[in-house]
Image 1 (tube, one colour):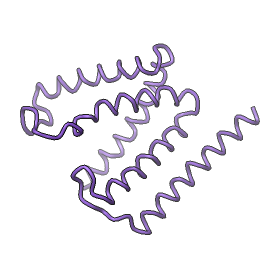
Image 2 (cartoon, rainbow, N blue to C red; image 1 turned 45 degrees about the vertical axis):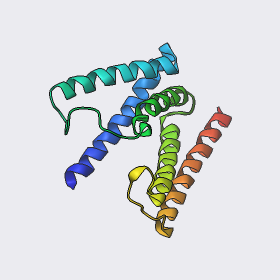
Image 3 (cartoon, one colour; image 1 turned 135 degrees about the vertical axis):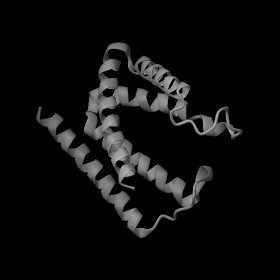
Image 4 (spheres, rainbow, N blue to C red; image 1 turned 120 degrees about the vertical axis):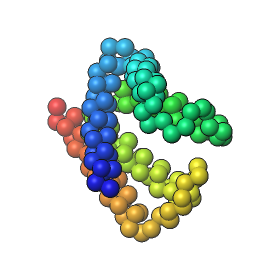
Length: 151
């Protein structure tokens, strides 16, 4: 359990760093090309790791519905949107809004057990947590708008 928590923290730090690196790249190349470069490098990295058997549980393409293979397409759009937004609104606000949207979307998917997940009802406590997160995102947005107005 401790390793999973540590892995999650390291993943979060990597994501924050990659968001900024991709934003700088996209300022030279454009948001979509920056996303394409990001995914090309990521695909090459994943291909090398898979070639050495890292993280491979079974070889071959699983027999799944088509929509389970759309994650890469969505990832390109997510990175391109971040590449566009981070230089304009900052990494913190972009990350807060992204995480808030992810958690709200995840709560809805969990509630209904969508995409083969286990149904986890949206309890009042979970709803409170999501509301507090949205409140934090709104406070960050207001702070950003105040900074821009003062400048």
